[in-house]
Structure formats: structure tokens, C-alpha cells
Length: 230
Image (cartoon, rainbow, N blue to C red):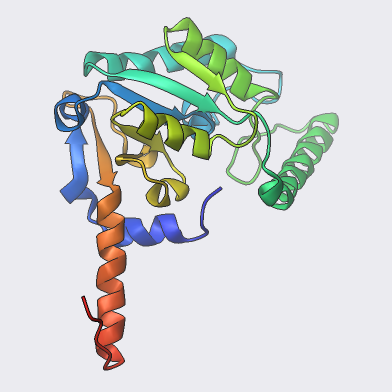
């Protein structure tokens, strides 16, 4: 779930244009053809709001959406390993319960509208994905030849450990934890352009976030009239 505000803060500070890379460049830059993916972050991208979400699920369309996603990376010479949360860490349980409470309130609102015979249109404030959608997305990735892992708790640390331990190219996700965890490259999911002549993504090295933090500390020290000894 990440550090609140950190993701947007660093994206404002670090120029996306300076870190954008063609997907085909990642193996050459990193020496690895494997990208570790935060599968939970993909739900709204691969199962968008225009898919059926009231009548049970539009799973053939989901399968095709996942296939198109996988082919974009395969065409660049990259393989995907996709991780999904298998549970919730105790430290984040209260936030998880708060989010599920909001989801339940949305479901009740939709059910009431359907019972009144009203048309229900998806919007950012009135939409929830189908039940067990992470399992369906995982099955689709597996059917398209990707390795899929469900962790015992939240997947963030398992993703980072796998990426570092297996020397993978980087992590694709949208969680500020990956700015903090020691992964070589954080590939910002919202920046991904998998269509077009040259698919690309913004790839932040961890050192970039650390350098920005050091710069901010130096500026603070200067304003305070302090000096730090190296």
C-alpha cells in the first residue's frame, strides 16, 4: 500500500522524460530479460471499467487483454513473473478493512440501484471489479505462459526479494514501497505505453530516489545554516 504521498512526490521531482526507456532496452541495460510484476496493480488496467462488472464478469475479454499485455513484453525480449497478494499483513490490516468497507458500501449502492431497475454506469466512485478477479487474471497470465506466484501475505517484499535474489531487470508496479525497497529499477505502471511502434516505460533506478532525498537534505541544511561533514 506504500507510503502515502511518496509516489506522487517523487514523480513530481524526477522527470519522467529523463527515465523513459523502450522496453527492448531493458535487457541490455540490466543484463536480465525478466521483469517482476505486481499483479494486484494490474487489475484496473487489465479489467477496465467498460468491462461487465455487474453481471458476473467478462472473462474472455480479460483473457484477450492479458494476452495483448504479455505479447508487448515478449516482443521486446522480456519475460514476466507475476506476483499476487495471498493475504494481508497484520500491520496493514486496518487499512485493508477500511478499503473493503468502502467496496462493500459501493456494492450495496449498486445492488440497490439494480433492484430499482435503474441503469448502473461505471465510474471511479461507483465501480468494483468482479469477485476473485486476481485469481482470474493470474489464470490468464499462466495460460499465456507466464509464471504466477501467490504469496502468503502481501506480495511487495516477496516481489523485491525475488527481483534482487534472481537479478531480474526490475519491478513493474504502482506502489511507493518500490522506491524504498532495494530493487534495481522501478517501472512505473502508469507510465507504461505498451502499444505503438516503440513500447516504453519510465524506469526509475533506486539511486535516483536516494539522490533526490540527499539533495533535499542538503537544501534544508543550507537554509538552516548547517553543514554536514562527509
